[in-house]
Length: 271
Image 1 (cartoon, rainbow, N blue to C red):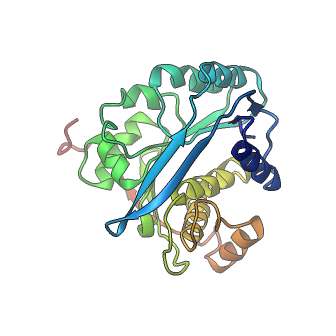
Image 2: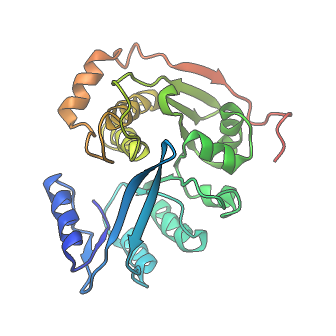
């Protein structure tokens, strides 16, 4: 389910209707008696893109609301789509952990990312950390993905680094896996690709209870297909479309991603 907050405005109603059309469970969502618009547009800028966002003030009780849900609602997994103030979000993650639920968290590429929080402390209450390659290097202050994963092994149970067309890197239990990306066609728009990867990975892990390498394949397919058109989730696959790509891939029994047995500490790395 989605513990979202909607406003009384037309845009909130539009987004809520889209969520319902996608069969997203909104029983944990709430509707405010005022506008609550969060609108972002993407504009071309010097062969890149710039994002401009308008947002109404967030409810003052936002984190209290989430914590109450974490403490009372029935769920198996809690996912956070980005970095939030640690002193407000750690109690929510800890509440989920206390109830036996697993947790996951994406990251955000912002200038203050390195100093945003005590990452080791925050990741103690996260089961799966899912940054992209640039974010992982920033958080760990490492120069390579492998060295970043080695450090993250000390901080979090599972680290998943999204490496664009190169696929995904996964660390768990002293081992590093590399699951290659897919060739879904020309890249049109990368907006939302990381979120689509997360959805595929977590669907495989939480719902289908697949091994991590297969979860990486699910994520790569969802993220790879999402970039073939304009928009965040516009080209995210349906379950049947995902299955058609899985049928083309090697069967899970034959899927053999590159594996590196990684020591927990690299003498050349300094925190």
